[in-house]
Structures are given as C-alpha cells and as structure tokens.
Length: 203
Image (tube, rainbow, N blue to C red; front, top):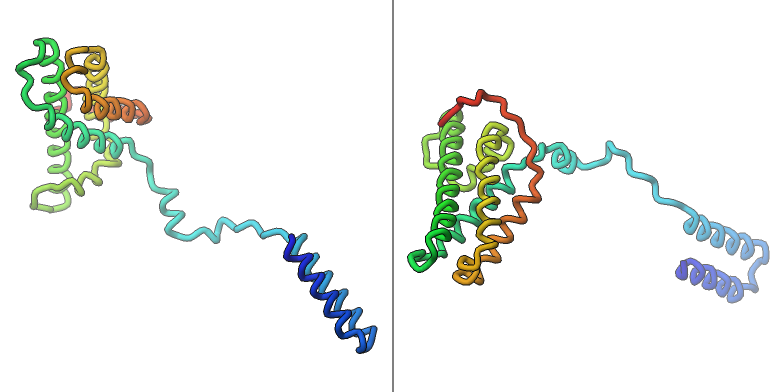
C-alpha cells in the first residue's frame, strides 16, 4: 500500500518537473497513472480453478490412507528398544514375564510381516529376500492390518502395565521414554478395520 502512494507521489513530482509542457497532456498522464495504481490496490487475486491443481498434487490427495504404515514404524522402534534391554536376570520375575511378552509380540508381528510379504512377492513373481522397503506393499493391505491390530492392542496393554512397574522404571530410566512414545503413537493411530476373512484363517 505504501509503495502505491509512493508511485503516485513520484508521478506528481514528474508533473511538476515537466510543467512547462502542455497542461492537457501532463494532466492526462497523471490521471491515467493514478487510476492505474488505484486499480492495482483494489484488484483481488483470482481464485484458482480446481482444474489448475498440479497432477502430482491430485494424486497425493487421492492416495488411500493407511493405518499399517505408522504401526509398522512403531514396530521397528520397538525392535530397536528391545535389543537394548540386555540381561533381565536381575529383574523381578513378574517384570521379566511382562518384558518377555514384549519379545513375543515383536516375534508375532515379524512373522506376520514376513508371511504377508512372501505372499505378495510370490504373486509378483519376485524371488529375492524381502527388505524393509518392501513393507510399502503392506500399507494398504486390509487383511494384513486386521491380523496385526490385535498384536498392537496387546502391546499397549503390556506397556501400560510396565509403566506402573517400579522395577522396570528403575532398571531402564532412559529407555522407558522410548516405550512411552511408542505407546502414545499407537494410541493416535485411527484403528478402523473389518475382518473380511473367516475367523479360522491362519498362517
């Protein structure tokens, strides 16, 4: 806004500087410039048409949302934390039992990941060993999601039990913050799923 009035002032100074020329021409120039700048001030940006949205942006908005991706991310974080726990012999028996449940849940999730990836890769005629990058195929797999959700529900129950355990907190004062983050992250995942297979479906 300040720049517009500055331009008007410059135009007026120009008018005074060349006032020895024909008055009609100078007045016309000054009025034209003033109205042009006022028009710039009052103009509004045109609203972008939906058809002008870039194709890649449309594709991103149309991509299906997946609950499996954040759950798999928490699995890998859990995997890393459990590898840091070390020897559990000095812990109370009850604490050891709950930690062993964490190991069991981790193993179950790993088996489900490997099984479903193996099935997908077989359909794609891929014979190599699966990698972490291949887990992207599981992000939108509703059957895989329905199989791993009970494991994460059990995981949160065990974690919340350990959070109330003084023996666990005293043994791992630093690592416990990582377990807190996993627990909170899983709670934020909107778990919405339906079982499309029979209850007797097994590995």
